[in-house]
Image (cartoon, rainbow over all chains, first blue to last red; front, side, top):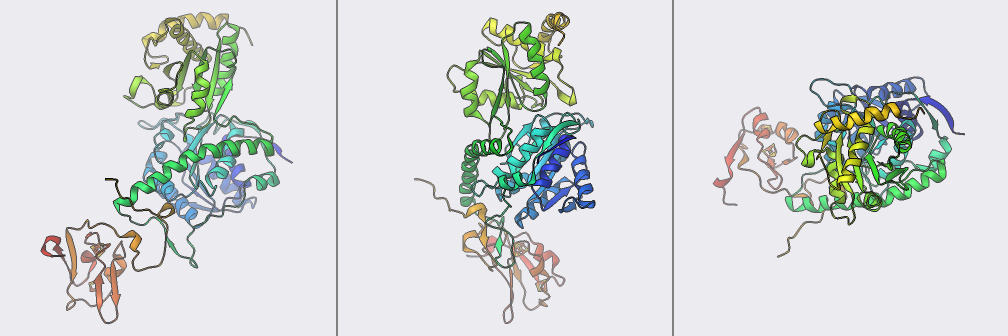
Amino acid sequence: MPIKKRGTGLTAVADAWQLADIDVSASYPIRPYTAVMAELAKRIANGTMKCEMVHGEGEHAQFSIAHGASMAGARATTGTSGVGVTYAFETYSPIAGSRCPIQALIGDRTLDPPGDFGSEHTDCLTLRDNGWIYGWAQDAQEALDNSLMYFRIGEDPEIMLPQIVAMDGYFVTHIAQDYEMPDQEQVDKFLPKFNPKFRLDVNNPVIMGPQIEPEMGPPLEWDRHVVMNKVKGKIVEVTEEFGKIFGRKYAPFVEEYMTEDADMVYVLQGAHAVTCRSAIKYLREAGYKIGMCRIRWFRPFPDEALAQILPKFKVAGVVDTGTSYGAPCGGGVLSTEVKAAMSEVPGKPIIQSFTSGLGGETITHEEFFAMAEMMKQTLAAGKIIQSGTWVNFNDYHEGASQINAAKTEAAPSK
Amino acid sequence: MAKVYKQVPFAAIVPSPQTENEGMVTGNWRFLRPVVDKGQCTECKTCYIYCPDACVNWAKDDGISFNLKYCKGCGICSNVCPVGAIARVPELDFDE
Ligand code: SF4
Ligand code: SF4
């Protein structure tokens, strides 16, 4: 029987790892990731969980340990946050290139300097070009569920790719919420034991990661490119099967909220979707025809799904909770990606970039209202009025904020 | 003309152990080649242990030799040799 629990995104992932019967976990403390290693250590110490826990002397070592463990055939996990993500950078491409399906948990945290413990997606977005599959969980339940689905997809013999279960630091990693921990039998049915075709084995020795000639490089890169595209089909398949076994149905790529008659939508990923939904309820009462599209996968990027969904709307406001200084159109990484994905799509909406929620700031209702107002003005004008808006900072916001201050006061008390 | 790429097995994983693997010959990136003076060499095999690319061979009758198909010319072997038996000679001094 599944158990109802109260915990954080990190205990939820520890539960997923326990259910997945991981063999090795490599650790190194950094907030907000740390609690998952503490949780695992506790479970190993009290005998609930059997798993080899290895402490690295830093994140680079940590990911290398998981890499080696995976090569030896172990289901291996690790994780980090913020500058820990960037410190381990050298290891990402080799892990993906040697097709080791390790799983990492990344609890997002702002990159230094100075030390800012708040959440932001920038850390995890920096490794988008390294061949890992990943997406953001909006809450603890989804973190647990994603972890199980990611193992299943990444370890598929046709895929063999590492995965990142990304989640907003603090908002998901640390806020206690109710979630359901599935039954061991259900998990065993869904997730078979990891059994790679190649592993380091004294009885059947192989060389992994040898030096190659330049002429051998492109075919290997091509393999990685092809497999990334294959992941999309696998996501659809696995998400559906997950729903059947565990009873929780997820949209494979993009979750739509109140979009039926909407002419404007927020496009975002991660935990701020929760606030966004409640903001939409107020906005609907105030007469805004607005909805939300929450992106569940970042790599591979769901361009086909967006191409199908977004042309229904007139304006799409992409909310970036990360930065890419000097990026085109004044937006962040997510809006750049959405714009690229939509560039050749006929009937695409006007795509507007918003940056908000940096440094662990909550995106408030008022900020969502302000974005809605800006989208409404874009809709009326039929064109972007300001390319790349930092909500709360840009001048353009001032007018909108006055309008919205009035609106907030008048907002229905729900 | 279409480019000719070399097909590589899944994730470049190849059988082992082999003293050399024809599928994985690396290009000649050297500009200095290790040359051992067998008169000085004590056959301590320090170079054999240290070569990061496993290019140092040792045979009972023949002593130390280098597999130049894989040698990068990094000079580690020459640095670690306790008796200074390995010289680093410019590649251009050789015909082949
Ligand atoms: S030069 Fe470097 S690669 Fe060549 S044999 Fe010596 S240690 Fe090995
Ligand atoms: S390290 Fe020097 S002395 Fe020892 S085996 Fe190599 S060449 Fe000979």
